Amino acid sequence: MAAMGQVILSQALLSADAKDREFEVAVREHARHVYRVAQAVLRNHHDAEDAVQETFLRFLRQQRNWAGIRNPRAWLARTAWRVALDRRRQAVPVSLEEAADAVGDFRSAGASAEEVAAHAQMLALVERLIASLPKELRDPLTLSTVEELTSAEIGELLGIPEGSVRERISRARTVLCEKLAGLLEKNRGR
Amino acid sequence: MDDKEKRFIDELLDASLRRYASAEPRPGLEDRVLAGVRSRQQSERRRTVWAWAIGTAAAAAMVTLLVIYWPRQQPAPLPVIAKAPANLSAPKVAAVAPLVQPPMQHRSQRHATPRWVDTRPQQFPTPRPLSEQEKLLVAYVQALRGSAATPAANTKPDVEPGQAIPPLSIAAIKIEPLAPEEDGDGK
Image (cartoon, rainbow over all chains, first blue to last red; front, side, top):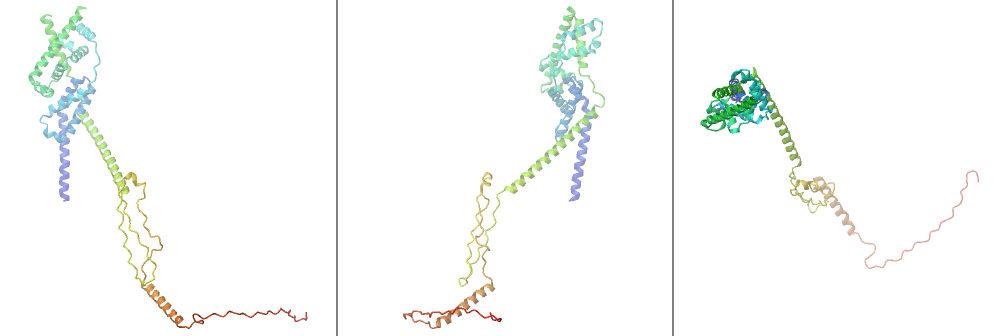
């Protein structure tokens, strides 16, 4: 009887140890991907790291159901997306005109598109423009900026068909282009 | 808007969106996440242990209170004392009142009424049947009384029934006056 108890105890310890190792592997494998998803929403390094931690804590709490999770990467991305949406704060308002002025100045100085995009003002301008999009366009576009996510994964994450994802991303890009062109045009006219 | 301008804006948007999510985490993200998750898990476990401890203590306290205040079953009534034999002049045993089982009461009423009825006999010490020695003593006393009564019944009375009793006369008592005694020295 005692020997049987010892066997059960050692098996439980081994199982706990295996789960611990499995969790560590998952963290090392997917932490960066989860971080990028959170960062795409939160736009803040500290908030994104907090969201990553929260995501993996939820993953750990689900360890009894790990066998039922077919794709841990997709599960983690989905959870990180929800956690990040819960934590998203109101973005600091950036003056569109000021940002457009700065971008116009860079362009007048003969900077290439890549050089202009490297400036903080351009990043702030894009953030502001994306934030102004309707949700149905904003979410697919935001997720599409995360390199590793395919249209199929974005569709699974948002619960919409893959074709809709592509169509919405395309529409979002069109809207952004029009707004950006309008701002730069206005800036040139002054 | 000319084609050159349109192409520039397209390129600018592409480059901006690439940079939008290209932020790399600081080195050591995985270790920080592992350490943070384990620390939070431990604190959660500690909270769980405390919650269990407090819950168990509360449950134990409730059980103790229940055990203390739960209405108890009264003990079975004492056996009725056997009747003493009729020929013995033993003191009468007071009837022992049967124990009264109080009806179940609501907790709020419990303190208003006494928990049990005092059924102790009024007489102290509690009467008991006579022992063998006491029985022998009683029998001896009765026998003694019987033998004492018999000669008295046989003796003839001084006055017959119906005979008139003569008046009792007592002679007068004469008391001589006391004479002073003479002392030895002639006084």
